[in-house]
Length: 259
Length: 301
Image 1 (cartoon, rainbow over the protein chains, first blue to last red):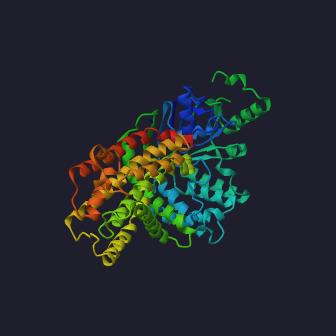
Image 2 (cartoon, chains in turn brown, green):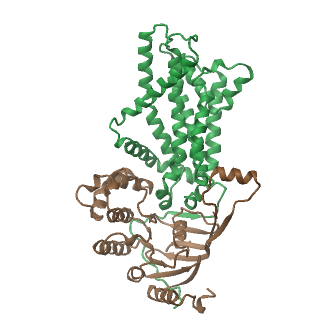
Image 3 (cartoon, rainbow over the protein chains, first blue to last red):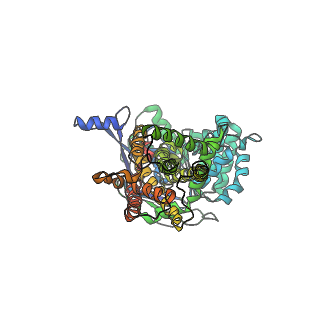
């Protein structure tokens, strides 16, 4: 892989089966086996032979409607899901914010949760201890809240804390899935600033967002995914434009059909 | 509007350390084991801290706090002792020897059982962490095993206290004096922990696919205890029934527990090799079952 690439995705496909049973239980499995019935499943092709290179220092926005495979793609880049076909090569330390409330145990304090999140992402105790106060400050938690159980936090505080943890890990590659919806306007501005700072330090950022203004404001490249396939990639304004037209018209432009 | 493919190469940030990771298809097959174990070892402090924090959270709202760690096994021992002495009154029991066997057997059994039950739900309970971060998932049941060991430790002074008080109140109670055979204790605990952790890996995986596994587990562990030499002495098994002791993953190690803790004896060959066999078999079978499927967990949760 060339040195200037942070992520290389080669012919990536991710398929999985989901059960159509209301609840998957041992009891149902035994009942089915005794009646020699097969489990009713549906195969989901979440990502279909997608190829993409992301250079170091770029900020890539990913747009697409629900079920386009954006989150699945992000999880695969993070190494959380394995590819069904193709491969993903990642060069650098990854930090993720893919589901709000990173492993947070609501009974524990914010500080304890920051420590757990940091250790899970591979930092050592000293590195995290140094960062906890900085994280609490960035998340703009009211005085003393950092040592109170997370269950006492408002949803805004919870979201801000998750975001603060993810950006403070000084990652080489930062994966954010709808993370910027947390917090009020002031916090949003602060998050944008922090991300611009990360970009200036030549770190790579991938953002999945339905807030299209975020993509045009922050990203230098964007891709548009639809039903698991890559429809287009290019300058954020153009991609967002095309995507918006698609949302209004409801069908893919003919020029994309062969992509 | 199509992209011309000319992105200017960006400078790499200053503290960048190249760390190439390649993710390739593997479903019901093992990922490369050496990097997996390396990652597992690097993040061991996560498992330790998670055990400490979970323990802290568990007793945070309880008025008696950590006293429950001692009170709970003691009360359980008392309840089972009543059951056993009512069922078999007037048995040949020198003083409180039977209670001593029951207590240390119960404490050791609960150490393994807690590894299994807490470990079994550790993956489904770790939902957000699993959806958000890539790390060796076996760290979660491993953390439960550490927590179970930490909860087992305070029961040792409880056992010694009952032993001493029992001897004082009932002088016929058999109390082994100091013997080098006590050096077998770490071996017994390691085998118990490994067996419990291995079985936890199996049940944690099953629980991801079938959410009622945990319900079934409560019955399995209860039957398992009745089939283990906890409420009965290993030497009461006669003839072909002795097989019960060795087809039970905890049979040999509980036999060893009773020999060392209660009688101060050394292990016999069957309990020694049996303990090693079940520890290794559980880890290998559980490890294969779990690790080969763990990349599937994020979809199933």
